[in-house]
Image 1 (cartoon, one colour):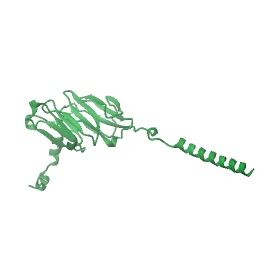
Image 2 (cartoon, rainbow, N blue to C red):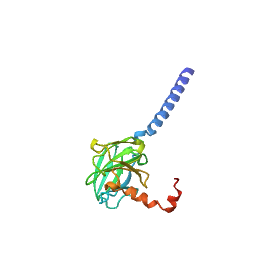
Image 3 (cartoon, rainbow, N blue to C red):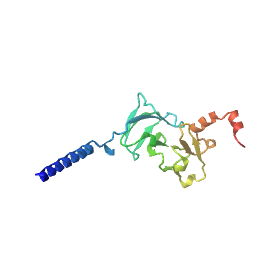
Length: 194
């Protein structure tokens, strides 16, 4: 009889312990069950093709389009003069990515890249520009017919870089260069080591 009570007690303890473990596993949140990031930013493509686009933190009130991006493999096209709100979905954390802008004749191709990802850019014509995260993470390609043109890197006020094929002397325009020139004054020039 004592053995039966001991056996019954042991079975009750095992049953209670296994049930508590089962309940714990049921309430455990898996990584893939966590809520998805949903942040909206705006991108404005200026009408003037010589002015670089800017990304804004606050969504536009009346955008021309609203696009949801869920991976860095997606590409988008915006025409000159368009505003777009981008919604980051899926597992994309907006703090870890940035927009690569590739200038076309009538707008920009946009692709989302991780800030630590190496980016390949391909120049096709004089005065074309790109906006990238870092010169050290950018592979530049160009046709053989443009091998004697200068590639110019200009820092932007948002922390990214404008890279263009061709100088201002060749007729190329640069919003980043214009902004940089505004910061240079007599005090700045005096402070520059020579």
